[in-house]
Every structure is written in structure tokens, then in C-alpha cells.
Amino acid sequence: MIHKLFKKISNIFGYKLIEKNLIKNQRSISNKSFLKIERLLDTLFQKKKIVLLQIGANDGKRFDLLNFYIKKYKCKSLLVEPIKENFEQLKLNYQGLDFIIFENSAISTNNEIQKLYKVSSKYVKNYSDHIPGITSFDKKHLIKHGVKNKHITTENVSSINILELIKKHSFNSFQLLYVDAEGYDGDIVIDFLLSTLIRPLIILEYIHIANNTFRNLLDLLEKNNYVFFTINENLICYPSNYKELIEFN
Image (cartoon, rainbow, N blue to C red; front, side, top):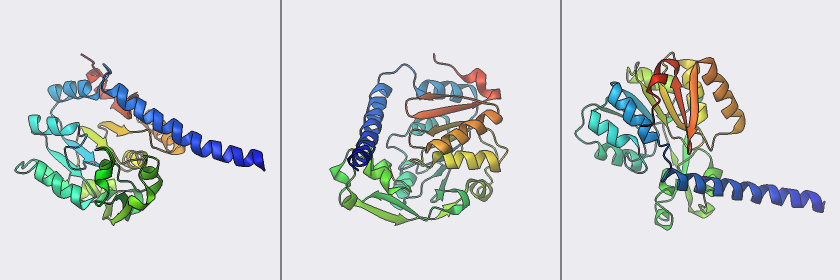
């Protein structure tokens, strides 16, 4: 009995400590590492005319890599953000740009996500700038980032799957799919690869994806002739015809 209790406690605290430190260490490395997503994006946007789909666009500024490229290269872009407050700020941050399309929905397979967990606006100032960006379908995702249970609230959201999204906006051709969905990323990309024939460069945050889902995602990427590698918290996936654009200058 004591052994089982010790094992349970070890698993709980071990998991939290390992993951928490891993995330912190990766973020520290990302500030100093030579291998940066920006280097790849510089090459991509310089050499190709890019149309992009960003899922989890947040407010368009907070920890957003694409804002600079969208504005500099005037890229036709479909930006998706489910949380109403973030969505309104997103529109303000891209105000006056007629090449931007906005969608206020959560992207989910079978439209299964009806609500999201987030930090209550009453308590959001208690946390770092990163925390408002970790809205998730999974309440535990916020808790393991140090958010107190009593500070978490829910928001009802509209839901649409990625094929419906593409059809709704006639967005049938794009070169970059960028996903930051706080643990649901793998489900979205798997659904995308299974339901469409579009094969863009894909960038997604992978560290919060369930292992079974992640293995299925990697198998599917291989079957679709993608080459992939990680930079910090992101999985970078190049279709075979984009491989010549993998440059770190």
C-alpha cells in the first residue's frame, strides 16, 4: 500500500517537475540558439510568395512570429482565434489590411470543442505574459503551467473543423500552416492531412501533444513525404518539394 502511494505521488510530482523544467529550459535555449524558426521563415518568405493559415493567432502580437512577415510581405492570411477578447484585439492589430481574413472559431475534429479554459481576466495580471496565451480545451494544461484552479474560467466558443474552415473562406491553396493550439495541435494537423490534399509547410507546437497522437502524426507525415525536425517547442514539417528551402544562413 505504501509502495503504491509512493509511486502515485512520484508520478504526479515527477511528471510536473520534469515537464515544467523542460519547458523552461527550452524557452531559455530559444533565446540564444542559432537554430531559430525566424531563419527558416526568412528564407521561405524571401523565396516564395506565401499565403498562410494561422490557427491560434491569439491577439496577433503576443509571442507571434508571423506578424512581422504578414505585414512586411503583405501575405494573404487566414487568422483563426476562438477567444472573443483576443479576436477583437487581433482585428485591431491588423486593422486596415485588406489581405487578412479573420475567423472567430475553435478548430476541432468533428466540431467537438464547445468551450475553452482560460485565466479569468480578474486574475490574469497575477501571471507572466505567457499565461494569457495558453487557453486550452484541457483544464489540466493551465494547472500544470502554474495557474490556480480558482483562477480558471471557461468561455463558450464556436467550433469548426479545418475542412469546413477552408471551404467557408475558399482558402484552397496556401504554403504555410501554422498551428498553436496548446495540446490540440496534433489532432488538427492529422485531420488536415486526412481531409485535404493541400500540402504546405507545417509548423506546430508539439510538446503538449499526447504521445499516441504524436506518433500517429509522425507516421502520417512520413506517409505524405514530409521531412521534419524540431526547433525548441515546435515541429517543423517540410513537404518534399520544399526541402531546398531548409536553410540556416
